[in-house]
Length: 470
Image (cartoon, rainbow, N blue to C red; front, top):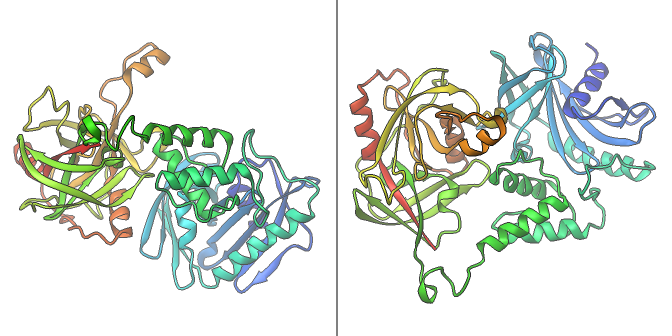
């Protein structure tokens, strides 16, 4: 296929909301191995986005788009990918040493656009390879020279957005701030609120750049939304509520005279003698974190890394553990695999020694096909959050994160769902740990099955209750 034809297909796939995308005559610029082109929405439509792309070995092509509203997108194509148009695929995108799990939607038999965390676009650098693994095939392309092409893409958007009589509107309530514009009051307010909540939106200047998009997306995902990263009145309202909910009712704490008190508890587990992993929502807003086991106090812990988007946190502890879990790396999780969950659910009512439940992997993705998660049938309750899910060999395969709201689903469907629970995949945890240079120990890929009683003992020995004090 000719490069120009591939670009049209890829640009349309990058932006699946577009009915059609047409290149603007004379807009193409060659920047090293990359070609940058501006597109309109339809032949007579206004300017919409610019795309940089290149095709390399085996006809594999990569396209990165930048819209008039400052949103980055990515898509790829290969002649023999064997995709089914409009079908969704779980894909692994690897840039350098960092892997991202993404959902791809095929726009024809050979190409797809990806729904991926905005963080990936900050990793696109020369000297690295970009690898896509999907539909049992793996393709790689060099990113050499991409910095200049990315800058040309930004300049392309500024050039053609300024010359266009109108820019395609964002959904109602979104801030229409162009890159390089003077900024908007809405975006400024959102950036300020994000900063107060601990996110990094970049400079508070009213311009929605990549950092702002990433921060908005992370916040949206933390409250259970898809995470499009776009500023809007709805986002501002949600942020305002989040800020208000964190404000203490009086003093500096919720206890008498502002003294912190225990307000919640979850589960964590050791991945090294001094490192505990749990959920972000377990530790969010806590003044102190204290670890307990079998009713005894193991001392305090401090947060060393968090990811709101993936609901993960890593803690350093005062009292080291002799037992920790090894991570299942290099062995893909399969449907119907047995899974064992350990945690401290309903701490005020159930055993302080913790609870063990058994089940199976029932799906390889979470709600709305979120490929960062697995669905499990092992029972979980409030307090299980952050606990380990281990496989037949006692290797960590996931971090328990949530259960389906049975009451809400019953109201919608008239039926009560049974044992629909979710865990964060170990691959997502590995990406989080490596991004923060936190050491972990991979398990033996050929590890053999051990009895459930032994798996339960390992999980219990490596786990701890995490108390949140505010």
